[in-house]
Image (cartoon, rainbow, N blue to C red; front, side, top):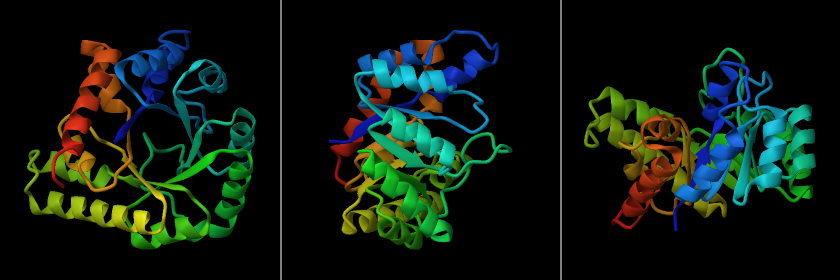
Length: 251
């Protein structure tokens, strides 16, 4: 059954806007859990623009659902992950100039380095994931370096969907969905888990949720945005209902 991982980074973004102590991301994780989240995702960035080291430690200690730590493949982050032991560590590209993660990790360009990082994470008992574009060469490189999970970057699909008036039949939207579908098939053929995420919201999520074999969607900004109006628990509940309905439809 398809699962929902809720990214709570932007609860911390709101807190950091005032450099205060509220809203507390840990409270957000609890509310997300009560709304039906199967996991919590946070990205501990090099510049600590939102999530802080203390947040990750408290989430590790206090949450009752699986924790997915998004991280760059740096020595600093590797040390933090091996110490805290989240259930999953997802390697992502990172740049200080970007507003959010833009584009997938180039596994092909750094296979030797990533193989070492993934080996150390696996030795610590951590499931390893990579956030990559829907490209067969990147998927095959991920398999070579020992990844267990591939999360496909759904941003190009989501941006096409929005730009073309939320028309699921627009050729560009259909083409982007087809890329994700083919990527998912290759991931599964290589015995890895097929996850997806980035820029998914309440309007575009169902087409992705119904793709064959997709195991988990990671969604943050849309859920935190809706929570301003309906509360986080309800926002998570609504998203999960949409996902579950779509997953039960013929693909």
